[in-house]
Image (cartoon, rainbow, N blue to C red; front, side):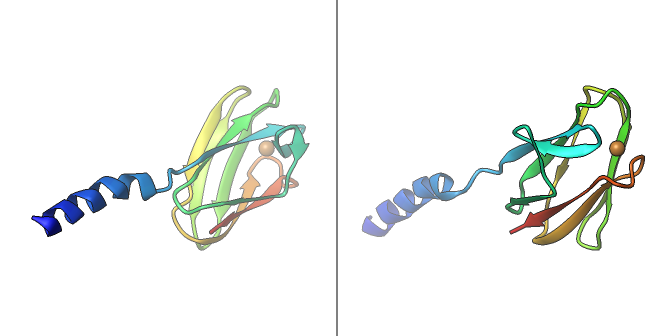
Amino acid sequence: MQSQRIALVIACLIPALQVRAEEYVVDQINKSFVMTGKPITALKLKKGDTVSFKNGDPFFHNIFSLSELQTFDLGSYPAGEARAVKFEAAGTVDVECAIHPDMHMTVEVE
Ligand SMILES: [Cu+2]
């Protein structure tokens, strides 16, 4: 009886202990990655978090990564659109734009 009660308490506590995955929004403005109004070159987040890459420019961007840790290609998308990537493994992911070779940032996944 006592052990059942303890098991029930533990089962109730587990969801509260789980950390919710965050969703970050990285804007693309004047061919730069921007967060909260400032250009950024790096972003730190946790495994399972998502980054939504929003296109705030009046032209297309195409965000991709050829990093060994996580390869992705969001394709070419227009002004106002956003496409998201979930980061699944710990390490560093290089993020680039296929249309603008000067655009570069890293995502450090903890
Ligand atoms: Cu671009």
